[in-house]
Length: 184
Image (cartoon, rainbow, N blue to C red; front, side, top):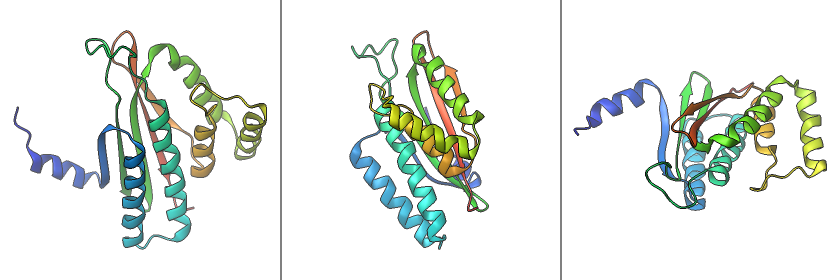
């Protein structure tokens, strides 16, 4: 297989990809990515308000990847994808787009989809109340979150969550999330 690296570079350049990663998400990686993006936005002389907004949403997105990647417990390579995830950050005009993707067990899709659709159906004020409600009711998942991260992403971005589930095999789908972060 011959990978045309220049073609790959050109596609990334045309799409304004600032940062792209595919692989296992570790805590060290999270720290590095956040530092890189902080430096890039500083060099672009973005306003402190926009830098904070992008940074905070990026933290939530990366933590979601870190804590919620599903993989086969017995490591069966035939049926199960690995713990790999993908994320990209691109800039289009004044807006930043944070795009993440990871495998999710098929039996968890309906629950997640229901939570995301509920979040998307709420107004700004309703989101604030829902956040408090989930926090106060202690609705924590086995991974610790209870959906607070997604609520937070919707609140901080001021946008609806753009998500998709692509079936991979009988047991797994690929979950993608595309978050737009605008200056205002």
